[in-house]
Amino acid sequence: MNNKEYNALNDFRKYLNSKKRIVLKIGTQVLLSDKDKLSLSAFKRICSFSHSLIRQQKEVILVSSGAIAAGKDVLNTPPSSNNFSNNFSMPEKQAFAACGQAILMKNYGSCFKQYGIKTAQILLTKDDISSRKRFVNARNTIYELLKNKVVPIINENDTISYEEIKFSDNDHLSALVSNLVCADLLIILSNVRGVYDKNPVLHKDAKLIKTIDNIKDFMKDFKETSKSLQGTGGMKSKLYASFIAAGAGTDTIIISGKNGKSLDSFAGGILTGTFIPSLKNNINKKKHWLLFGMEKKGQIVIDKGAEDAIINKNKSLLASGILAVNGEFKKGEGVYIVNEEGKIFSIGISNFDSKDIKRIKGLKSHEIKTKFGEGNLSALVIHKDKLAVTA
Ligand code: GLU
Image (spheres, rainbow, N blue to C red):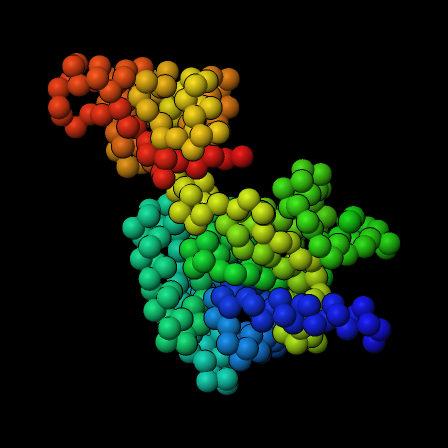
């Protein structure tokens, strides 16, 4: 080992030491054998890896896929072709998930038990993340579990999620969970070693990228390199997940979950895979939730002056700067803020419903009072603490 390698080893050890709360995302392919069956040794590998991290005083939260693939064999439904995602109907996949989720938990439960670690299941839908109350409730539950040294194992509640209210995939879910639990690090276990400069299946000389300094710029030019048959995400969705995590100040590392030795080395302080540091100008967790978690219902179109005040002066949105309201929404719901050119540049939580905003748009505070009296209406449509700028 030369000096440089020695330093790199020490640096990563130090880095890993500083990361206390880790979200570990496990893709379906990681849990399957070559014959596309659930592999017990994969569960053992993951539990052993989690245990190594927990032994280093870290809190580990799992986001695990695999329910649909695990349940498929229970029901024995014949596929109509070999493209997994397209060849089973939504109810079929939901039924697979209902059977498979129990199998997943049984396997995790028995493997973790060997280390004396207890597990808990948490199933989330997009609605649970969208609603601030449910989001905070899920967070409180997870914190209570962590306090009691229980490993939460999270998956999407597939049996009741349908297309419109689904997360795009579990990579996406893991990024939102990272914000939910205020994670220091998101580790995405994949069936490849990390992110390559070109498709490693087609190009023998493809090189593993060790660090992606600016995930936002990197994603602009990235073309999908590989996509698995049974899982839903590909590398692009992992990068998007790391971009979401980066915005909330969480670093991501994408590594292979297929190789026990490399997981051992990782836990021992050797960085394998691709490291994606968080963005320097990351935003606070609540604003991050506004941008990526909360559901948006309508649009408020505003003039140039109000746009400038929000972007450059961190000001609240006042009625006087509002030109139009599109769609219908209630007080307390999320809305897109759109500029005169029709570009969405911000997201916020409205103090009034869409009908009321139509009544007060363009008016100054004293004009609102003269017209509507000292009632519930005021010039403050969205407070600056409930506004987040998308850029
Ligand atoms: N929730 C799905 C499952 O457990 C996986 C979705 C995904 O892999 O993105 O099978």
